[in-house]
Image (cartoon, rainbow, N blue to C red; front, side, top):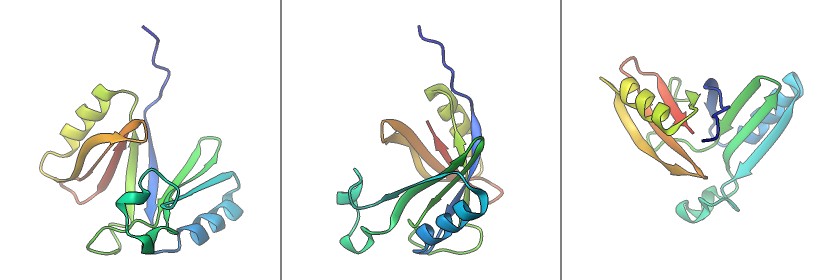
Length: 138
C-alpha cells in the first residue's frame, strides 16, 4: 500500500458578489504568488449553471509557498452577507478523515451538502453550531 503524504490543512475560502477576479487579482498584487482562476464556462460544472453565470469565477486559488487563499463568485441562494462570505476550507488527507471531520463538525449544526465526488476528489459543506461555514475537501 502506497503511503499517504498528504497533510491536513485549513485555508480561508472567500465568496464574492461577482468581483472575485478583481479581488483575487488585487490580493495577488499585494501578496504575490500564482493565481489560478476557473470560470463556470469550460468547467465540468458548466451545464449545471445558467448561462448568466458562465463568466463568473467558480473557483480561484492564490498560492505562494504555504500561503493559500481560495475564492469564488458562487453566492448561496440567500445572497451574500457578512458571515457567509468566508468559509474555512478543511483539506483532508483521506476519505476516512473527511467523513470523521464532517460528522463531528456537523453535530448541532446544519449540513449544506453532504460529502460527494467532485473533480476527482470529494467535497462537503456544513455550518457548525457556532455559525461558522466549513467546506471539507479531499
